[in-house]
Image (cartoon, rainbow, N blue to C red; front, side):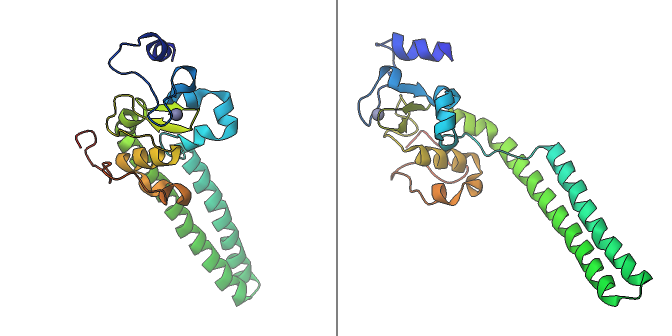
Length: 199
Ligand SMILES: [Zn+2]
């Protein structure tokens, strides 16, 4: 964090001057996205979310808990079905069995989805990191840019930036609809697996 700062402020003649292409802002207004995200003010103001590198995922232990919860609920269905059999109430038997089966299938479906998301994030992590960490955020005009102009020359809104990073890293599907609907500037590499930087 501190090395980034000295680089940004100190070396004016450096090859990569962090000057905002949107408003010409420089100095303390311009920080790496990592620094901007780490700022407590960004956390409370929502900027950290808007610049998020990758989707938050449920950990493996979360999935275990979800599985157990699902099985407990399915167990209630089984109990209901059992009491239906005991008391000769076919409605309970059918309803309880149906409930148990649906909950069982639903739980498996949820857990498989969580595992798929975990894998996608893991697979895209390095690529996302490469695109995310060199980017800077300008707090004067709330835009994101790459000081070297690559892979993208112009200023981006945090939403465009997030969409770009997530899409490139292969988890664009996990963007919320608001960000999904944002369009990227023409000429930007897009689509999962696209090759950034040589436009
Ligand atoms: Zn700016």
